[in-house]
Image (tube, rainbow, N blue to C red; front, top):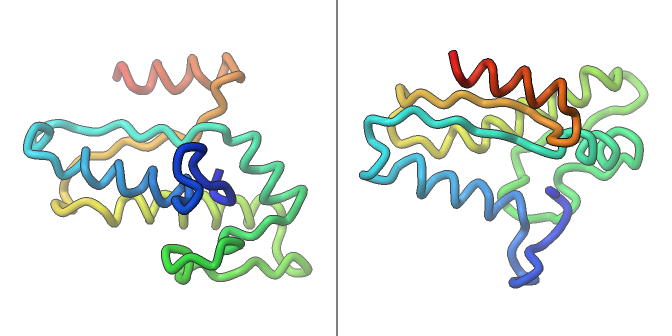
Length: 126
């Protein structure tokens, strides 16, 4: 929901807030010795917005999105475009770690896809 604001605070972008919350949790003294599992959910909705509707990641104009380089849709495949977007979003979260050695296991998910959820949960158990 990179292009939306919070229901309770119309000035706060949802992705920016998620990144800020991740930073607080990831660097909390309570989780210093704990690995983190990061679920980037709603893959299907993201791909619909990003790929089908071509809503750019930097649509809000917020400083947090300044490092995003827009996709040249004429020379970039859908697969490459979504991979670049997923990688960029994941990097925004990973860059919040004060300890770069902190283990963060990330999964891009679609909670309504039961096979995907089963695969992710099995990976988390390992």
